Image 1 (tube, rainbow over the protein chains, first blue to last red):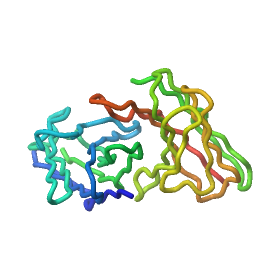
Image 2: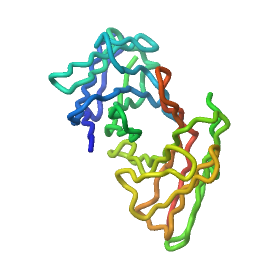
Image 3: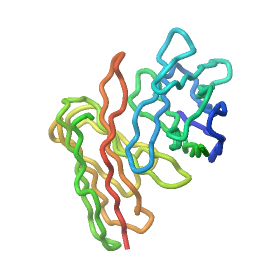
Image 4: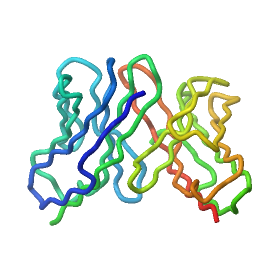
Length: 113
Length: 113
């Protein structure tokens, strides 16, 4: 069975700072990878995803993520955060050929104006 | 927003009573999921469905059952509610292919007293 680890549970940044959130997964086969965001009081929505090809993927609102297969990692980045990025961020993995989607425990990001 | 409706939105019940949560979609998506969200645990998969009458267990399925008699409806039943099942429950739907992503419902806040 697959699992997902997000080591940063709570991150506090000032506006304009750079962001990198870690995500590692454990699964021996091919996976599809996702980052979702949950703004306060809202349900989760997709930020970006990786299926194959260029390991650097770009998503909405200036976010990007890099898949490093050798490290089983899919870290989320943003060069300059805004107060409106305050939210909880979840990494998720789905093994190809299976439908079970597993989420990490999430990282709460607080951006201080 | 995708057409997903969860009902009820809020429920308070007593320990030992059965509870059924409903997820209804109008998107005709094949895959449906039930997650619970708890602080510090992120989203944990309870059960999922890959077609009518086709369901499988997730990582925290004990004490829960599901049914999917129609494409549009996915029911989650707590057979005998316990206080540890107090949580926010999210339904999600998905299709396969290049546009794959989970669409989430608005959630059900369940309190078991």
